[in-house]
Image 1: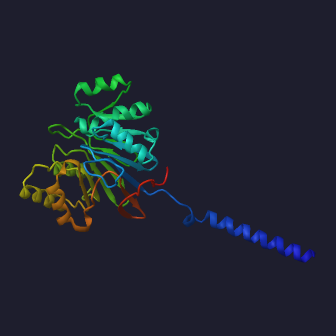
Image 2: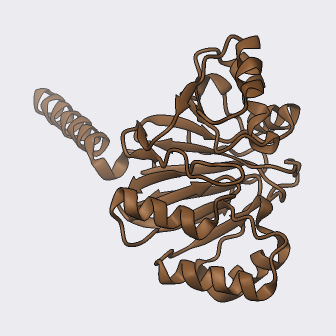
Image 3: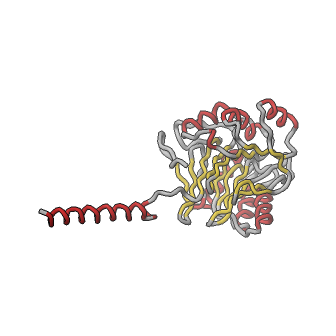
Length: 288
């Protein structure tokens, strides 16, 4: 009886030790991807429950920080998308706005009212109306002039002169720089060159945003694509103001390295791989 009891206790202890080892096994523990980007606002939609709208916005999760890049033109629509994508506005740490146009700027005031702790970043050259409206909701934006590090590994170009002037965002990942642009008014090629010069990089792993090619002729679009390829821009998602013709040409010339944009798209870098997918309706990305 005693031997049987001892054997039973020993077996139980072995089982508990095995469970403990499995629980501590790194392969058994779910971890966040290195980088996650969710498109919140765009001219196209990848999900039936998310409506398209003129403008652009994306949410970035990187190294424990959550950043909003641009905020769309319709405040009600972007708040609706945040709710449908199960993103709490209070979870957003920073909002950085690429340029002064309403289709990138307007939503941030409403998001700030939902999250008064949000740190907002405007270019110093934004019109005074943008700052007056910020004051009306008790927002005090950080005024950006030159390049700066927003959070560890995420950098703004600072002001790049154009009509209007603009800033882009670059994220330094293990597979290379990931770059976000708003509308590329200074020129998409110029913005890429600016990032490469500032960050001393000779390639861009992934380029997302508005390329401002909507009214360009086919030969001009092809020249731009060739220039981006010469600059070693490896994969692209032309969104917002890129235009249908340019989007189709990027699709043809980039082949499998073209990734369709649209509200609800999720871009992930994990284990050295970049993947683009769409979360099904009522399914959310892993919480952070």
